[in-house]
Picture (cartoon, rainbow, N blue to C red):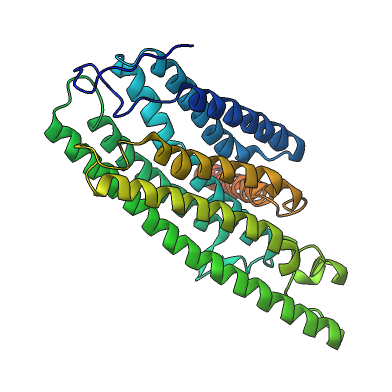
Length: 348
C-alpha cells in the first residue's frame, strides 16, 4: 500500500512525521495475539479478574489497528484522537492488573488473619491501589482529550498535555508507594517461612493457617501448606517486578516527552521510533511476561482469591438479618402475649 504523507505545513496534518504503516500493522497483530493468549489463560486458570489485563491488550490492539487505518487517511483528526487515546491509556489496565495480582498474593501466601501489609489488609491494598489507578486514569484521560481534537487551540493543547503529564507523574508516585508494599510483603513472607521452620523443628504449630476455620478446628497439617512459601511466590514476584519495571520505563518516556514540550514539537515527538521503542515494545513485553508466567499458575486453591471471604461475609450478613428478623418477631409475639393477658385481666 502506498502511503501519502501530508506536507509539514498542511493544516490537516495530524502526525509530526511520516508514520510507518508496516510498524502499526505489525503491532496490531502482535497485540492481537497476546490478547488471545490472555483470554485463553484466564479461561484455563479460571481467573475472572484477568479481564483487566485483557482490556489492556485489547485497547492496544484497537489502538494500533485504528492507527494503521489513520495512516492511510492522515487528515482525519477524529480517527487520530481515537488511536492516540487508546494507546496512551491502555498501560493503566496493566498497572491495575499488577496491583490486583499482588493483593491476591498477599491474601494467598500469608496466614489467615495475618494477610496485612503495614496494617492494611490484602483486599484493601487491592481496592486502594485500583482507585489510585482510576484517579490517574481520569487525570490522563482529561489531559488527553484536551490536547487532541479538531478545534483545540495551541494553548488548550499545552494545558491538556500538562494535565496528562501530571497524571503520569501521579501514576509513578502511586507505583513508588506500591513498590514499598511489595518489598514489605516479601519481607513478611520470608519471616513467616522462618517462623514455620522453627515450629516444625520444635514439633509445634502456631497460628499460621491458610484456612478460615479457627486454629483449634484445623488439622495441624493445614497450618502451613508447602506451596505457600517465599520460594513458591518468587517466580510470580519476579514476573510482577518485571512488568512493573516496563510500565515505569514507558511512563518515564511519556513524562519526558511531554515535559520538554510535546505541543511545539521536539526530537522525541518528531521521530516515530521513540514511541515504538519506549512505549509499544515495553507494553508488549509486559503483557508477554504476564502471560509467560501467569498468576493462575500459582494462585490456585483456597484463598487464591477473595471468593471464600465474600461467601463468609454473605453468610454472616444473612445470619445477622435472620437474627434481626427473629428478634422483631419475638418482640411482636411478646406484645401479643401481653395484650392477651391484659384483656383476660379486664374480663375477670
